[in-house]
Length: 132
Image 1 (tube, rainbow, N blue to C red):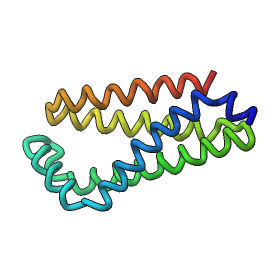
Image 2: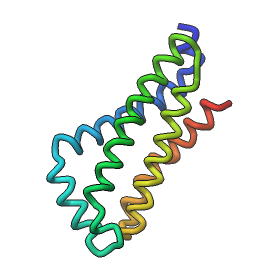
Image 3: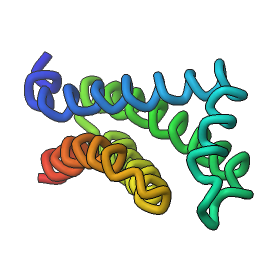
Image 4: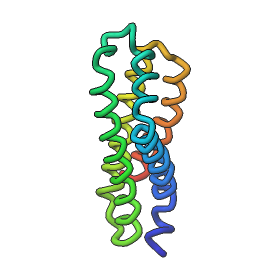
């Protein structure tokens, strides 16, 4: 219980990121065709238009790895006070969000980019807290 209370802010941020990326990854798996169709149209006029299936696969994989790292991070924070997996999980969340932000900016979806920025602020704060 001491480790939980010591790391309660980091655990809460890890839970937020876990929910975010696990849900997003599951949605991509369950509705692959719908996501692919929407993103193909979203990026049709960009240099990434022909790469959408590959890029969607990459994002799916990193989202699932990020979610798994967040679970491992929570576990190791609580059980053995180890911050390694939590740091990796939050850092991967930051990288994933930067990839998504890049895509939104390329597609000139500035409202979508703003939404991602809100998630990014939480993730960067988490990275700051976990590395104190």
